[in-house]
Image (cartoon, rainbow, N blue to C red):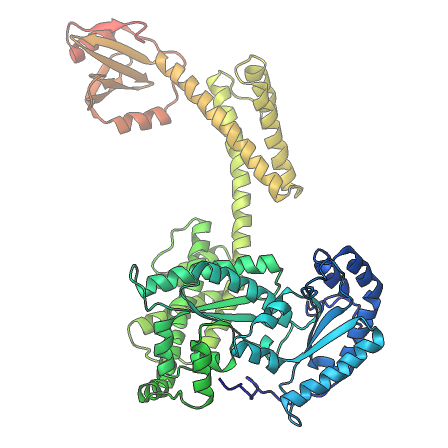
Length: 634
């Protein structure tokens, strides 16, 4: 096959400028490597005698690199320290006399001479520079187009050698070849039967590199002999595994650049090639095979000779693509205005209403509720933000009902600006709501603490004491008597002190949260204690009876009594009656369990309950003449 004489990707002429950067300084971009790194990487590969020799000439290698960079500037793609060649027969164990270096030069701008003439001239100049520095430096100079031509010819030895080398100076190419060759070996070892080509491409291959240039590789998979799964399944399965191997290759080589892997199946590739799809054509034009079974290079030759031409279908498709793309752009603009901006403003505002304690209404009613709550009542928000929300909701409604059929980019820009302003103001609104909520919570903690202490003291028979004496009474009547643990007294004191510190502005957010946790623990214990005591007091107001085979109950609550006719019934029959002055029951009428529960919660349990003769007469009327009053029922 004829060699590709043209540069794969020509570029504009460059001007050779001296490199002022000292090669010994660390390159923050990650492009250049110190010579010390090269020696470390080769240390395990070389005999001890050669390692010592390398140390001796390290400074000279630095000098050589500096001179080459100063003379040829950014034309130098890489300077690599190559592994020593395999010793000849009979010379095994003998340390090599030469240190082998490779200099790669970007020749894409060469206009005045042929590639061969350029390589010969550069080789002579650079070799002479190396000899002047030290006779033991043996340099091979290679231009990029010659390196890639080796790949087109299926000669991958030099690429593998570069991948094994230690970079003395690297603009990114050595790093790209290292990670690509490691990845390629992993892929071929696993899927050799299916891999048609492994191709590297991208700006880093043609002198257009930048510190952040990516490494792009393409893997072409043969799917023509697939029988056990669909082509789509094969593609997805292999893609996932091949990309996973890419992460491993990056980690193994320490690659710092983005490593992008594209996987194509042969049938899809052929369809795209027939239509001259721009992506595939660009891939063919600019790619370099690091492995190929013959198809990629053949197609590349056909492209260069003008044999690959787009079909009329492809021309028509690409011709109409502009109109289709513009329609899609307008649809996306509409979607942004219809859904994205609408939800981006409405949803957070509804969250603000919920945070305040109000259930959010339907979208169209939300602006009015915002005005009522945040603008007028609480004065936490300016009217313009309710107006912005209403405008966005109105536009959303007009698009939804096809009143507004077209959206312009400038409209989206205006709404994006308003939405960002709206959301920024909402952050402050949430802070204000949280602050007010925090004040309410702390007031609730104070009021609830005082209330439950009074309820417990009252049920213990301690009433009409001053606020200042409540703590002392709590300690004296409940803690010192052993009814409530000492721990609860300490917790109570911390809650009271915490509330005072909060009012003085001394508490941090974390300290406030601790006060809340202490309060919850304190209230849980106190409520349980209060319920137990109320249950004990309620027992004093119960009269339990047996009538026939059934058990009933009468609960005396001040001036009203509740009667449960059958305690064991699933649906209990309940009545209520007024308690007369002589202790009897009159005006008996139906009642519900809900009425009883409300009355128990509302009424104070009498400290003492007196049972008079009349109630026994009335019990016979209610339950029958065989009624018996029970003692120690439980």
